[in-house]
Image (tube, rainbow over all chains, first blue to last red; front, side):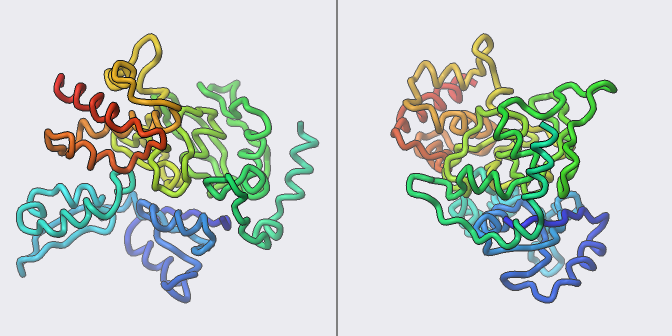
Length: 110
Length: 227
């Protein structure tokens, strides 16, 4: 695994500004956001992803879920998959989403 | 020891690390992450910990027990709270929570089965929720409560889940067992239906090569029915 600079931004605007310095967001990007990390770290161990800067977004206030006026859901970037899948409104109004999440990854990685 | 660290530091330059090709896993090396590759790519704190089994940290830091710092390049300081104890660590940023627990702090109850989030042997609790520690950076967890199998109970004071695993013979070789128990305890606080099939689904991230599954499910159901 290539080593990296670990950055913890103070707010989402700062996180976005740092990430905007990357040339690409596709595979091989040199700057990556890090939330849970179960995909990014997995690929970093295989040297498929080799970021030199990692932006930790876990401490930002992004873990909420809200209904929108148009009748949809606004899901925060760091809301845990488990919390989303077990959310009462998701279970009642979007059961396929809940079932897909619970089928897609084992409990220790969601 | 200081001379050895200086020689190690010279050989662990950035150029050496970035020029290294990814190592092909040797046969029988399940994780693809051999001890040789760990020694040559990890920070020196992790390296010295691998050579010398004693933990390199001050368990109860005070003014006369400062953080242990080998002055190597590239490491970062990391305060962690593990099983209620405060640790002051200095680790390579690439260190996973799993490797930090096993190699830096020498809490080896948590096991490395696959190192890729598929087997669950590395399951620990972070703020009471189960996490595959092999796919989590240690750096993420300052200020959080980390619980390992060592913090769940002791031989003299077993957690009820540990006692149930013993009573139901829910293990053979024992390698998956700490992860099974940590997952099972977390499951007690998760929405889980009453049937064995529900338990199996929520325990599906913990693999047992010895096939102790029926007894594992029985142990968990016993604890749940008592609660």
